[in-house]
Length: 101
Image (tube, rainbow, N blue to C red; front, side):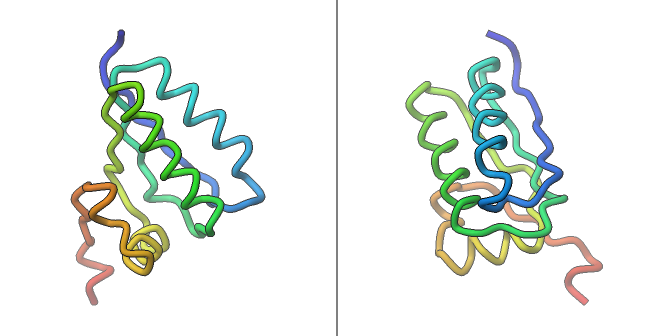
């Protein structure tokens, strides 16, 4: 098994992209011992995208692998907060200085 791999999602996590992203996430997860998701470029996330992240987290647990979100876009952070799922994912959320202003 290889070392942790970082996957950057550059498209929105929406129903329009979910099918392709699902396969991309599952393939990346199966080929590594752990996966780091960079979601810093995600401009929009809907319930399909949220379900995709939950699926990936459950699949990682089933395979006894680590899955971590290492960078959250404002849209991802807002959605996780709104749905009270930040603790479920358990990843530190870093807010950049320009977002705090």
